[in-house]
Length: 586
Image 1 (cartoon, one colour):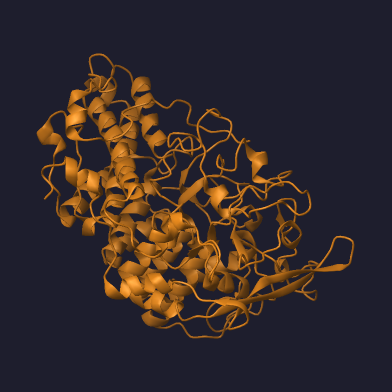
Image 2 (cartoon, rainbow, N blue to C red; image 1 turned 45 degrees about the vertical axis):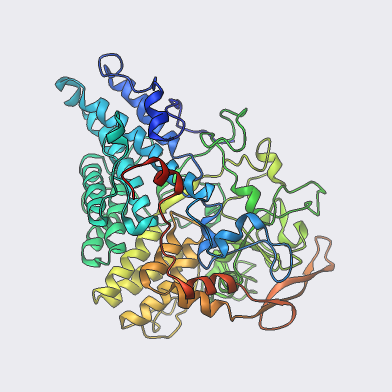
């Protein structure tokens, strides 16, 4: 079990319902400054409720979002049993009346609501309290989250034309606000983020709290998304080179602690949502204010651990796409990095798969890293086109854990954190900015910094005899961008962040082209023979992914490619509940 810093969650309004319902209800949490806002400890408790709102899985909606781009497939391929719950997301047919879409909208406005309560309460304090440094830190955090949620909503709904909520509504007119323009929304959330950037310290204590680096990251990201790399790279440069202060960020070099829960809030973490399995253990698995999440259930294998005969607890639901699995497993390793040799000697045999692959996904031919207490082919058979499993949200590497049931009362109550932003993502975004502004060498260096920590062959002509290079020339924007779009970004950041891959493909204008290309790619599987603990061999039938025709051959993304070829599906519409209950939206 792990400790969590969020101690008190103040239960505020449960959901944003219609304006009539809201005005008929008396909100016991909408307290005046005369009765509540008398100390910074009291306001700190309400600020904690903002962090509590971030626990809602619909903020990031990692349970559905990966199906919308090119990195995931719902359950088995071919003519098998595709999970119907995820089909609308995978086939790009989500409609404005979808209940999960509504929850995505409401979850973010709930955080905005709570942030506005904190902001209004802080603004009503005495001048003496306002002069206290804690006041600015609390205001900076509240404005950070208000700005962040507007940024998220702007990035996924209605081409950015959403409702700006800058206060807690108290009348029908204030609730029924009209949509703002995309530019107005950007101006609003950037003002909040700039305040946070200017007033939060580079390092917050505890590290679970938002700091100036998180604000800078979102500001830079927003300008990159807008197509303004010259502005974006100023913020990214600050984070990487500690221009305004010492943020304390560094690429995690001990990769054995990446993506497995062994090093929460590590040196690379910028914004991370903190879960735990030892707080409010009585909560229902679908309680969106609870301290656990359901991602282990969707990403772990189904059936028993073949060694212990205990149920693993997964559902084989969210599977890494075939192309992504293939790229992970076949990344060229640096033969001069001793970590890539199984006996620790440069003259010894090479690993079967690269380090980044073994930390990110489970595959049958990874006979080195532990997976639920054993080697991967010992644990599950990888058959029936279930040739890879995502590792980023399971407890497979926790010592003593052989099933997801052993981390808590249910696989749907996982304590694994959600890493929203981390330093390697900033490196890649800065590399993109540099490529787009003519600094090709600078872009390649940042990409290589990440590749080096993973023990991968570096990009470019050979420049040192102690490392392997691919020998290619990266001296123009197109070459570097091609690597970033289809190698660096997805292999480093797959299944992380807020809509990261979907937004990237959309802003590059390649979504339809990408899905169309992947819909023609043919994959199949073959059997794999592995070494048993007793020194013998055993086979896992139809378990190893192969590129090209063969056993159980299949293609992916056929329906989503057809949907995108017919219509630009880059943004969701305003959800039905909002249009029905808000008279200012036509």
